Amino acid sequence: MHIPDGYLGPGTCGFFYLVMLPIWTFASRIVKKTLKARQVPMLAIGAAFSFVIMMFNVPIPGGSTGHAVGAVLVAILLGPWAACIAVTVALVIQALLFGDGGITVLGANCFNMAFIMPFAGYYIYKMISYNAPVTSKRRVIASGVAGYLGLNLAALFTGIEFGLQPLLHHTAGGQALYSPYGLSVAVPAMVVEHLLLFGWVEALVTALVIKYLQKHSPELLEERQVNNEAHF
Amino acid sequence: MKLTSKLWIGIGILIVLSPLGLLLPEYFKAGSAWGEWGADEIQKMVGYIPKGLAKLSGLWQAPLPDYVFKGWEEKGLPSLSFAYIISAATGIVVVILVALIIGKFLSKKGD
Image (cartoon, each protein chain N blue to C red):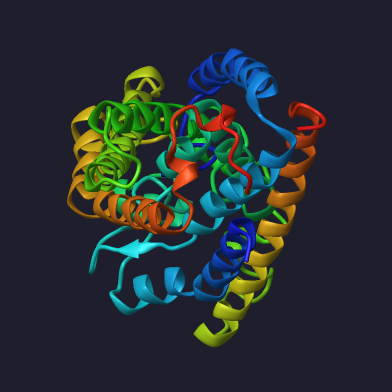
């Protein structure tokens, strides 16, 4: 889901930087108000987890590959704003050091994976786990569903961004200037592979970690994560 | 053991296991992720290389492109796996440093 340089036109690239700028600013403000000094290691662990889980490429035999992002898990544990910052850090390092995702498209990649995904996942989790005891099974299921849907929404947005390019930018002869496939190809391609396989990987990873934490550190799952008094 | 220590160990285990993300796609003959093709792949798929894409795609030369050392691309899977682990470890160290610095700036002191 890491869009490389050259796949989105300058307008789209600029648009998503402009969209992300206030989100990053607001995220810093919110986190500044709520993050306690002793929670900083969790922010780093969240960013590191997201970074490394994205390296686990899962194959569709004979087809393409994809991976989990971990953004929903981080959002459940630290809140969506802190998750936005953690995943942004992972995506920036991936782009700069490893060329995984482009520089010009960083705004778009962060919009999909560091904004849409953690926020959608977080609120889906909140809805399904509403009033459920910290150690209940419903929380595990809620986290899995949130991971699944969060990743798929991110994939849907990525597909739309790809698919708009041939409409926005083409030569007089009809050749695409950037990503060559239109919405009718890009959206189904991105969404179907995530619905069928990669979304399940995200669901499994998210739910397993939540299940582990229920056993070993249930205070992490209490409401108002960034404000609670749990000692890590 | 503190929870954070356990989670750091978990991250360490993921770093060691990371070559699975390289070997499994290889084993199942899976190619690039959708929309992350190289220019030559696009040429094959649509018959031309989009002009803007050709111009922008080489914009940034990453020091460890695709989690491999430069010049190692054609080496065997054991070497690539080794490079993948080193890349994961390097990336994690940088991610942690950046996150800690940001966290230090953003967190409330003293609690």
